[in-house]
Length: 314
Image 1 (tube, rainbow, N blue to C red):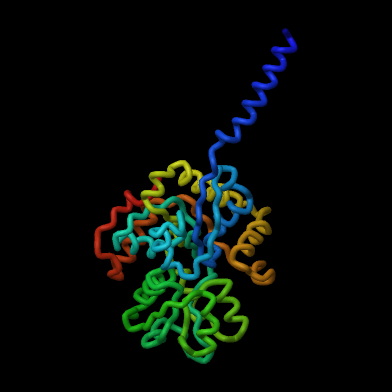
Image 2: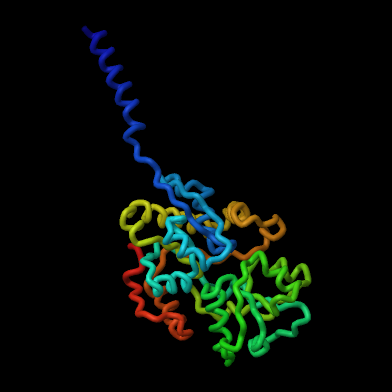
């Protein structure tokens, strides 16, 4: 009788063990869109250190050449979460897309000189006034660098309407300067350093140092519908990015952080070693979004009232 019970117990345990994988919840798949800047470092770290997998998220990181195309990719479900700049995000909302912020990327800092105005060698551009009548490439019309550079021009008494801005992806900046297609570009490292090292251009202004501290440079956005249907995944994504941000803030992890960045934006070792990394800001506040709303209203970029309280996933 004891043997029979033992056999039944063993069979029952085996049956339970076989049933467990069938009941295990499948990982939520997320395609995340990023551009070639270090502001995505906390996402890169979360992917490489296993913070997404720990939260049962299957996250595929997809490179997007132009930041301004990310909202359309979210709308078409090509991406579940993507990293537009705050201005691109707010313009999309203003245009009728129902997007929300899940988490955040990098933050502005007066210590960061990793982006600025890079003028073509021989152009003579040195000041904001010198930009009048010039053709300047920006990596996304209405994106972070475009909006903040226009604010810099305004603060220096220059009407940004007198500057001819054209859209140009980061990897094209050096070639456009060498070919004379543009007079300057608003660029960022590692592309900025490559341009100056090659002699194709020079930094006319580290204009970014005028920006207020602690505002988002990148927001991680999703369709509201997706966030409402996948609240655990949205929360898990934010928590993973927070853990990535905490990892970044430990000096002993610097080499691993840089290795993660290098993997996803393909930096050579000599560039990777000295590139500046924006401080991380995984949680986006209403105050941070309100700063961008104010800046964009000054530049007449928004047509409708924006209620920032409705845009941040809690």
